[in-house]
Each structure stands twice: as C-alpha cells, then as structure tokens.
Image 1 (cartoon, rainbow, N blue to C red):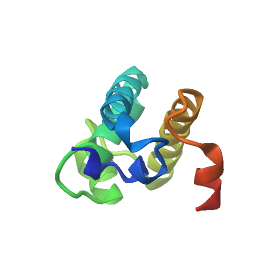
Image 2 (image 1 turned 60 degrees about the vertical axis):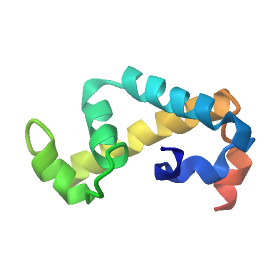
Image 3 (image 1 turned 30 degrees about the vertical axis):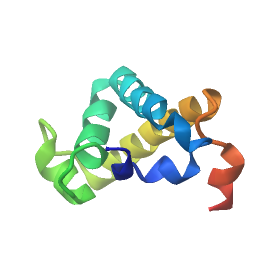
Length: 97
C-alpha cells in the first residue's frame, strides 16, 4: 500500500512506514471536507486520475481549475506541515527536490 504514496521517498526511516500511513490517513481525515475529498480522489485511490477529472467529475459539484489548484495546494501544505512536525518528513529533503 505504501508504494502508492509518492512522498514515501522523503520519509525518515523506512521502518516507520506503517506509522506514516496511519498518520496520512488521520491527517487527511482531519482536513476540511472540500480539501479531504480532493486529496482522497486524486491521491489515495488505486485508479490513476488526472486533476481535470477530479475538478470536473469527482467532486459533488464541478469547480474551476484555479479553485481546484488553490484547494489542492492548501491541503498539501497542511499535510506537509503535519508530516514535518511529526518527524516523518524532513523539510531539507523536500527543498532539495
């Protein structure tokens, strides 16, 4: 399951993968619904889906590309901050890439 998360290459200590997956799920579940659904549809399903398919078809109501990008970026920033705060991801590793 962990292979589906692209951020896995930045995780500190591969032995903490199960704990990290649990943190991902818990953190996503705490996001506001509009951000949570977006992240779940785009990144947490097994099917590959493009951004345009999410903002046009997968949400309860279609939104513009600009609104989608703002919500996605805000949600990802929140996730990164939690992962850095918990020590799962090192900010210096993220900034190198």
